Amino acid sequence: MTPIQHAPAPVPAPASPGPVGISGAPAGPRPDPVRALLRDHRALCADAVDPLEIAAGLEAHGVTDGTAAGLGHRDVFSLAEELYARAERTGPPPGAGGVPAPAGGGTCPARPGALGVLELAVWLWLTGCGPAAGLLPAALAHGHRLPGPRALAAAAAPTALALACAAAPAAWCAHAVAGYARRRLADCRSLAEFHGRVRRALLASVAVFLGVLCGCVASARSALPVAEATAAPALAAVALGALLFLGRLCAAHGLARPALAAGLAACAAEAVPLLALLAARLPGCSALDRPVTWLTGAHGPAALPLVACAVPALALLVHATTVLPRAAVHGREDLSAAPVRPGAPAGTGAPTTPSEEHAP
Image 1: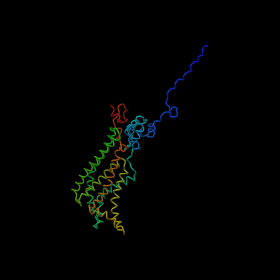
Image 2: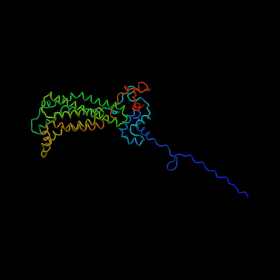
Image 3: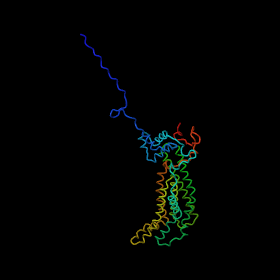
Image 4: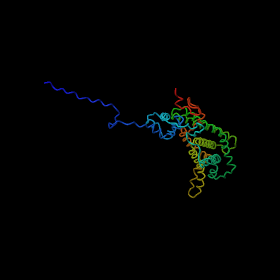
């Protein structure tokens, strides 16, 4: 008897491989975090004229190299290059077609009227009355005769002359720092490189100005009669000049509030000794005049304005070396005068981007 043969069961075809999620279902499209960042900073990326401007804006909004690493980039500048390449530009860049670009990386340097008037009053007080601010407290502390207007004017004259002579070098140093920072915006490949270069240029400009100011103070004190032959009045004049220079440098880059705070601190420090001497006349408050009496007796009346201006100037210098090297605070030159990229329409004034400059 012939055995019955059964046909082999059909083998099912293997399923086509595909992305499988945790639950076994096909995974959906991965979200694009760079697109989300581009959406959050759409105006910045659309108006930027090069990747470094986007990097400066991201830095101002708190985006760091660690954030860029989480998005798959080595640093903020690499992330800014992708944002610059993917951004949609519907209109001409700022500065093209006669539209002026805002200074200070989008920061308007204009200040409210009340703030500007207060700042002007502070600087006028420091320039006109600050050099002789220690004469009246010293006279009260040691029981001397109060100085008259002629004595106050004679004490302030050498400092005023030195500051007037140093005005032009101060303007040149500030202009040199601003121009250097704008040029470095075009050839720096990272924010860290830009920070280091501008910080070194800022410190060099401050050193150059202080050297010129010391020469102006020495010349003014040799040309005019001085009441004190000690070094304290000269150092007080240098401290006042440094405070004025740093204050105007910060205010020119949109940092008017720190500059005004430093000026107000100097004014308050000059007024505190006089108030302490007056308060020492009250019963039980005689100890308030001891610091003023000791300081003026050991180093002369000029020690008071020296301390009052030197401490705010040092604080403002630390703040300036921290904030001014940021690319976000530096304005760009008028884009209508910038070189046009090859192939760009005439009149756009679009500058060459850093990536194009370094491309082979």
